[in-house]
Length: 154
Length: 179
Image: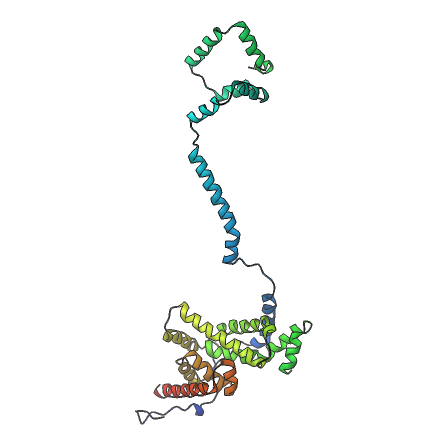
């Protein structure tokens, strides 16, 4: 090969010996077949892998259900917010007979009523006035509607 | 054992494991050195040689016998090397010269290298060649393969391979003369 420097020795590949440049750890090729064989057999075993596609496939119906339930719940809450006015309206639609029948069938004690209702001084007075004005016949009917056994415990 | 006999045994479920062990023992060194000259590091070569034989095992059913068994294994190994080097370049967003520098540093480390000064210089000069040209050079120069065998492995024409090899030799001699 021609070079610009006449003193430079040209390198010829054919003059170079093909000696191996690299080496391996001792006994490397003795143990390699066993390692490869184990790895090869392992690679053909069926394995359950969570791929992105599989995760999406499994999660999508659940996410969709959560979204639908959430949306319906949100819409329902928006259309009928529970307020004091609503409760009064709902109760007004129930007849007295239905209420009495419900209370008769329900195992509610006087303590349950007292826990739920709080009276103030003036309201108790009004209540007393109403009771004072009640006739004996009306009182009989009223007492008959109550469970006397429970009243004994007050 | 001849390759044809080995293939017969590989197709039989009773002798498959035994035949595969024989196949690995027969080709492991040639494939390892083929890979090692391309990826330089022993650790990377070790991973790749295992990958190559695992692929051979997995795709044995797809080997139709149109080519020779060793040609098929060499082709898998060549593909593994080229994709490993491509990944390396992409992963680190490095230009070619930096990957060459990294591989060259491996040679300088002296870990699992036994070559003399000229051999080390030759290996470093080879790193300056494009990967495909380097792989052709290695198969012709070190493995003494015939052009038609290399053509079968690389799926390239003999003429193109001859040109590639002569270019590679010229470049290496030039690099080492000026070094």
